[in-house]
Each structure stands twice: as structure tokens, then as C-alpha cells.
Length: 252
Image 1: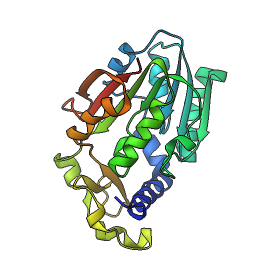
Image 2: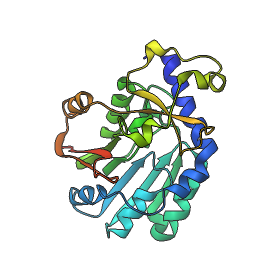
Image 3: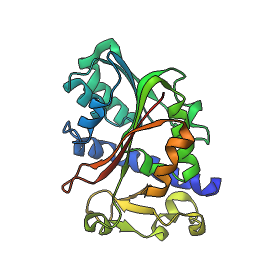
């Protein structure tokens, strides 16, 4: 994927969350994803330091607190409204053990430039990778996440499995509908076959968001590329219990 297309797709993501931050926050209440329970079981000895990349409204941090985990928390996100919601949700619970960083870690090809240069016991990317255009950018983000792992630390990530499900097939939007937003057409030859546009909800006039379903083949390249030891690979969440694919990897 060329740089122009990558930036166009990232622009769509930013525009979507600017328009829908409040509705998105309201739809993501403090009901945890079932798969998060297995993340807790893979954590290193407490107390731990958590970096929540693309933290949104802080729901994962709230889950860790409610699960009784002893942790310090740093959430980072590119959307100011969602980050404010995370602060409102977590600061009263964690006090000075929580911090929040407004930063667009996908603004350039070097995500590490925007992430804190510190070490963490757990680095989480929950519901993030489907918004990252191109396999190169996804690997760059994962490498930046891996660089922030302390020895024995765990990288926990999910990939949304939306393809082929009727609920989301009905929300597909044609690429021709977003030219005005981007100031020019998308070069479809630059797109992967798993790159799609999805409406949020069932409103046919709602602006779409860019989404990508990571392939199994790409998943399987990551442990070696990151020099991490696979800990768990499973599917969970949603009505059928398979809406997200999880991969937990440990730094030896």
C-alpha cells in the first residue's frame, strides 16, 4: 500500500471517531469482553504496568480494576473525547496510578515516535488492528509495542473477525462514497481484499469507518517477526464466541 492510500484510510478513521465519539462511548459500556478473562490469567506477577494502546474510553482498564489486578495504567488514544471518557472512568478508581496520553500513533510510519519510551508488563491492543492500514503499518505498530515490553512482559492483541457475517455484510459501504471526505478517490489497486468500509449501526446515511480483517497467515508471522513466545491463541466474544481472535505473546 502506498503512503497516500495509507493516509487516506487513516483520515477516514480519525473522521469517524470525531463524528461518533459520544455514540461510540455509549455503545461500549463497562461490559467486558469474555476473552479478557484469559488475558488476566496470562499476566506476569503483580504489581504490573499497563500500556493500553488505542484505549478508547478505557473499558479494558476498568475491567482490569474490577478483576482485582494490581496495576499502574497508561492509556493512549488519538481521539480527545474518548480519552476524556477514559479519564472520567478510570481516574476516580486508580488516582495517581493512571495517566492518559493524547497521541496519534498512526500519524507516521514510525508509531514508536508517539508512544511513551518506557517499559510495561502488559501492552494491550484491544480492537485496534482493524483500523491500521497495510501489513507493514501493522507490523511497525507491533514492533513499537514489543519495544515497550519489559522482560517477561506480555503483548495482548485482538483482531476483529467481521468478514462473512450477515450483520456486518449489511453495513458495507462502496468505496465511491468517500471521495468527498478524502479530497479524491481511493486507488483501489492499493487496497487489500480484506479492506472494507463499514457503517456504524444500521443508519444507511451514517459515515463509514475503514476496517481490515487480519488474515490467519499474517497472524502467524508475528511471533517470529517480533521475537516473542506465543502464550495463547484463541477466539472469543460475540454471540457465537468467536468475534475476536486473540493472541498473547511473551517477551522471554
